Amino acid sequence: MTALATVRRLLAAALLLAGAAAFAQSATPAPSSTPAGTAKAVFAGGCFWCVESDFDKVPGVLSTTSGYTGGNVPNPSYEQVSAHHTGHAEAVLIVFDPKKVSYQQLVEHYWRTIDPTTKDRQFCDAGSPYRTAIFAQDAEQLKIAQASKAALEKSKPFKEPIVTEVVMGGPFYPAEEYHQDYYKKNPVRYNYYRLSCGRDARLKELWGSQAITH
Image (cartoon, rainbow, N blue to C red):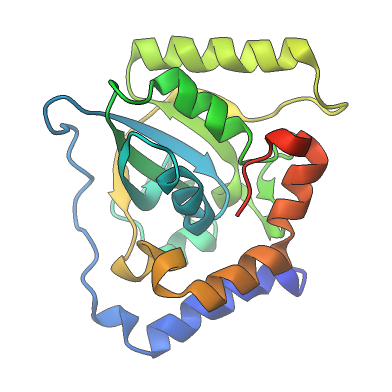
């Protein structure tokens, strides 16, 4: 593991030592229902602190929740997931207003917040928990996401192939409370991590002016 790859784990460990463990972890998956007139989307894009930050900026996004999905162990902890013991990816559950932003628009926004050419890695974070994936919530979302990926592959914006998964979503488990809105609650630590990890620099390299950066 590189020195940069340890930054985030050290920050999370510091929070735990400071008393973050006092927050209760959700014991059940996030509810499958959403408030009337809203819809949900789930994206994995490496560090969920960053994904939250990137999607909270989008008009029509009502809430974002960091969590774990795509694995085979119920109610995983951050330590289990980051140790590659559960098969989960760090992901974000987004509740949005379809009258203000479409799922198609969220997918297009998502592409420009990630490096879709690296498998089981995003920037300085390596391993399957940091894979990129679109977890569709129904058949229509799956169709939209698959078509968007196909269009991106056809346009060939990168020399490397696109390896981001597009799959049907399963149970989503909210992460521990200290991970929620981390970029708001700990801006100095978050900004240091994001800069050290090289996320925005790589996004600009890939996407140019279309990159969604901090």
